[in-house]
Amino acid sequence: MADKIAAGTTRKKKNELLSFLRYMLRRPGYTVGLIIVATSIFLIFFGTALAPYPPEMSFSGLERQPPNAAHIFGTDSVGMDVFSRVLAGTKIDVTIALVGTFLSVVIGIPLGLVIGYYKNFISELIARALDLIQSIPVFVLAMVLVAVRGGGIINIIMAIAFVNAPIYARMMRGQTLEQKGKSYVEASRCAGNSDAVIIFKHILPNGLTPIFAQATVNLGMAIMLSAGISFIGAGVKSPTAEWGLMVSMGTNEIILGQWWTSFFPGVAIAITVLGYSLLGDALQHYLDPLERKD
Amino acid sequence: MASDNGNIVLEVKNLVKEFKAPGSKAVVHAINDVSFELHRGETLGLIGESGSGKTTVGRCILRLIEPTSGSIMYKDMDLMKLSGKELRKLRPDMQMVFQDPSNALNPKMNVENTLLDTLNIKAKLSGEKLDTDAIIKKVLDQVAMEEDYRLRYPAEMSGGYQQRVCIARAICADPTLVVLDEPTSALDLPVCAGILDLLRRLQEELGIAYIYISHDLTTIKYICHRVAVMYLGEFVEVGSIDQVFNTPMHPYSNALMSSVMVPDPTKKAEVVTLEGEIPSPINLPQGCFFAARCPKATEECFKNHPQMVDMGGGHKVRCHRVTSE
Figure 1 (cartoon, rainbow over the protein chains, first blue to last red):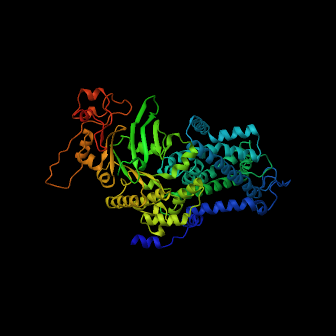
Figure 2 (figure 1 turned 135 degrees about the vertical axis):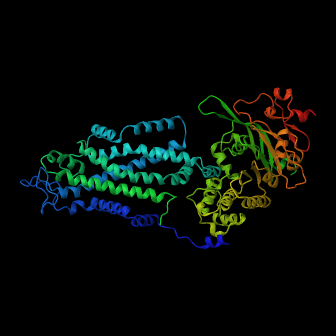
Figure 3 (figure 1 turned 135 degrees about the horizontal axis):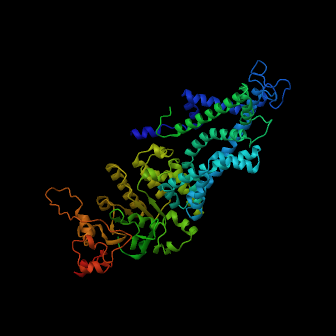
């Protein structure tokens, strides 16, 4: 009877995105993360427009100005406005990280599904090759790739996609192996369903959750990577407004006491990475079935 | 259950399944020469201890795992010889209910979608149009579930209801045969009784043949018509419930039956205790597989492997000592 009453109450299909946002807004730490991420997305589109000066324009005679009313973050060694460049830099760094991570997930998931579902010599070989790629430090590998293919934004995106794809492929493979052993997969096969239906209707939806969480956590790392590549000089070239490059350009002047050229883009990197890491952390906790979500 | 051949749903002959032991060249003999037939609307129980190959037999019949050799005749077709496509077309006819219902339902699918997963493919493979909505309604009614469970997810149901959904999924394909792999072992006793009654009722209504795999003798006795006792991948005794439970012939069945508790304090229990463990399926004994643990074993038992012999009335046994008497 009690069962019947409970079943009778129609459950509304909850909007997962809204309830996740509510989950984050109820926790101050995650709220900070949410604000940072929202701001960064906003700046991707409007950063350049909001900048007080064109980010790639140098003002001759105004080089190495400390922060003042006209240039609140100061100017760099060629007279470009640091504040404008920090705002405009969001577009490059965050976009590279987002697109690179998205691509790595898009490559990794199908690869992981296939090598997890079909177990044979070739799939094992691919799995071991992925392990091999993962054993190389991500930064070194990305650096080599960019050095070989040349620095441009597209190549940095490709490098980030390539070094991260094995992570998702491996995770998806593990998830596939786990789900494949469950009886509901066998039941679906018993009904006559094809491998494609089993993989996409049963295994994929049940194995996707941890991958989303991991990808969000990795976004922060991808921002570090994209800034890092340009920092060492392998990525985008001056005068492009990019945080890693700006930090690198300013390092020569720090010794002269001109800290602002490196400091502000460095802070921008740190805050953005923090924001995406908080988002990933929140997602991971939110998706943890053992945790309370209200 | 008359033994007229027109009613035979499934005829398994000399089924053998060997696995390669991982990391070595050793061969695990999971099933050694299993033969039996199953009639329409009949329940055949498979009993045996862990590792005796009961579940492997169930999965081989449905070709969820590939048997090494033997033949599985279903309605004049040898399942072993069917191609992938032909087999898929036949799949809805033979369904399975699994041991752990929480594992057997996709957590991301509600009841309706779980049933549709089976119904849609059945409609697609057979080319006929199915009124899926009406079928779902009917099937839920058959397994005694209220209509409003349709949109529930597995996590929102109790184990008993989850198992009902699994049964609903099996019968919505309108099968001739359902393999029940310990369907009650994960459930509480009262829930278990409900499920067994449900299975019996469905069999009466729909005439489905069951293969009921379990190590629980009481449920076997309750639901099965015939029973096969398995030991180390082969049948050692087959017969009706009455034959095997009341007059067991094989020393192993004898020991099993004596372990069933009788709720009668005046009855003295004569428990036959077996020494040792089931032998390794990698190095099969030369003679009778049971000889090392058998209280009646003679020299012959260690030398020659016994054959299945019909002792009359469909009661078959694989034992030198019984057949020589």
